[in-house]
Amino acid sequence: MSTEPTPDRGAPALGRQDIAHLARLARLAVTDEELDRFAGQLGAVLDAVAQVQRADAGDVVPTTHAVPLTNVLRTDVVTPSLPRDVVLAGAPAADEDRFRVPRILGEEE
Image (cartoon, rainbow, N blue to C red; front, side):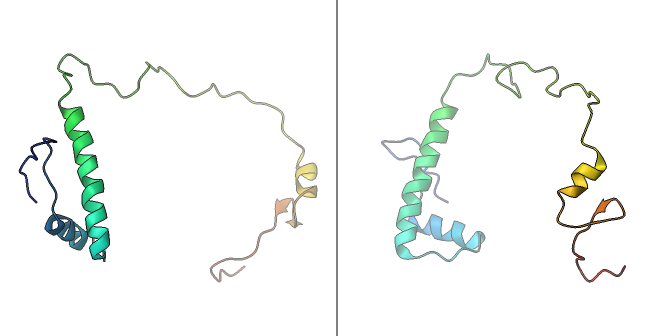
């Protein structure tokens, strides 16, 4: 791909050949119209990345979250649930106190 910065953007320019090459690598069939459209879209993405790369973040500590998290899981608390016969009464089919579901993948009983 071309790595020449464009005069107005500073990000590398992508030409039709670059887009066609990327499409071949991704095994995508693209039309001439799509090549033109994708070149503009990928150019916009590269511009955004170049703009972020210009930000002065030398004194910013890397983080995984915007706010500190210590434990995002709730504590495990046992709570009463519905009785089995009430749950099975709402099931389309039940057998021996269990939900009955259709057999899949040709399994045998």
